[in-house]
Amino acid sequence: MTKEIINCENFNKLEFHNEKIDFNTLKKIEISTELIFNNCSIDNIEDSIKTYTKKITFINCKIGKIWFIGTSFNGGLEMKNCLVKNQSSFEAIGPNLSKNQFIIENCVFNEFIDFFDCYFEGPIKIENNEFKQGTNIGIFLQVPYGIKEGIIFKIEDNKGNLFLETKN
Image 1 (cartoon, rainbow, N blue to C red):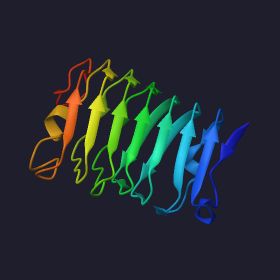
Image 2 (image 1 turned 90 degrees about the horizontal axis):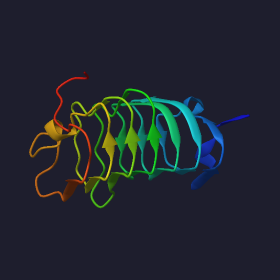
Image 3 (image 1 turned 90 degrees about the vertical axis):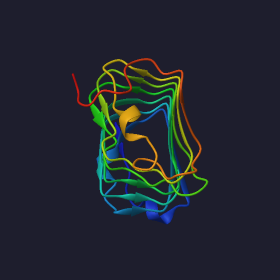
């Protein structure tokens, strides 16, 4: 059975473990609940023009595709040990504010991942990932256009082309 995410504004933090999640039931424009998805299966994340004021975390998840378009991660985003099966986009995302980190670590992306027009104001860590069909994160994560000057960022030990302009 697929679990829906509704009425999350009544909680400070919601955790989901070993569940199939219908992420598209999350309808609010501003999400002020910390969301943690651990070992979940998520078919699609189609989430545009939203603001996450608290951290959103995906750990050991299997995700069909991600479409974060114009989404702000003010509370930070953490994605670790996840598999993303299809072409996905983190287009026009940001800013993660001040101390709140944007982390993608130890993930496998089977298709092209688009970071067009992203902008970050807080620390970024893109480390130990496999981009099988490449990504453009290396093009768009540069001072001053994709990252605020003086921000700590770490992009290392990734496999795949980080400088593709478009998908193959």
